[in-house]
Image (cartoon, helix red, strand yellow):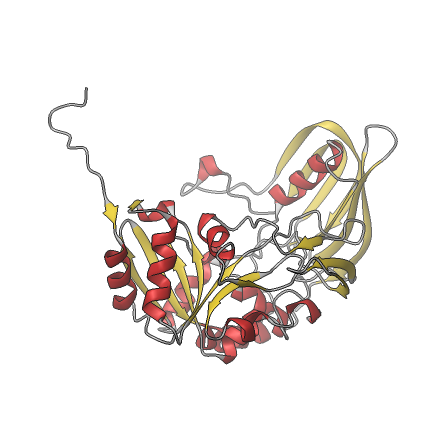
Amino acid sequence: MAPPNIVEMKYEVSIDDLIRGFKALKIEYGDVIFVHSSLSSLGYVVNGVNTVINALLEVVGDEGTIIMPTFTGSIKDCLENPPFFKYDEPCWTGVIPENFRRRGDSIRSLHPTHSVASIGSKAYTIVKGHEDSLSPCGDGTPYIQLYRLNGKIMFLGVDLACNTFFHTVEELADVPYHLQPEPVKVKIEDRNCRVLRREMYLHAYGTPRRFREAERFLMEEDIIRIGMIGRAEVRIIDAREMLDVTIKKLRENPLFLVDEESVALECLIQAVKMVYNREVDVIRLYYYVPYNGNIIIHDDAIKVHNVKLVPKFLYGMGSLKTFEIKLNFRLSHAILDGGCLHWIRISRSDGDVVNIEVLHSRSINC
């Protein structure tokens, strides 16, 4: 039994609460809105996920359009593991996008990793031709259409760490780290079960970003609004303004959106474990190592020197600079020097050794 001085509270969010909250954040009739979301962040939503979707559609009205990310890509996608996208394939971007894409009036773009679903007056304009774009988020994609249509981006209970539109800016600025350096032949099955074959550049894993930290910059530029709906913090950003100011920063410093002192260590460990466990035969990473740092991989250890890492148990208290990770299997010898992007191929030999082959390295001297 709870102590008598503690009151159990249950916070309910209704469709009227959502509509009122969206309008307070200047979401208007006719708007084109790209929505990143977390249902659980809101608290208890009366009648669940469809209440959120219906509220969004109600606010933008018949002349407006809602877009949601329905991504299916993964760290495994590469030359040896080309993705095969199917129109009805579930997405991993959350319960709201998954239910949104399954609605009868939803249209999904055809892309093997970064598809979107859309409902509204401009839905077809937004999704068409995604399968013919050479990259996930650049020219010819729904993200560029969002820019052209003066759209807005909503972060409903999530922060800017999931801001896919930053990838659009990275592609337009031609940063060196974002795309895999070799095109991949992919298969795409449309809603009529017709299989399309395309060759395109895919997202590269291995470079740590600081998307969340970029919020301060956007606030200084006065292009972000923040409010509360239920228990969720909600952010609204004008897509055109965000692209225009961020691309200037990236052209001045191509590493503006990169966590320059860090490495994507969890990404590397995940990749070698997946290969060791035979979940996949090969994974390729475009791996960033900062200036003055290096990574030495040998036997059962990954040794990291002069690289910032903030493990969860140190959040808010400090960081590690030099450390060693011990694994329960063997790795081939490799050295990843600082100041470079390393295109690496991770595979497993006939024995129990995971091979890490540096295919080529590119200086990040900007």
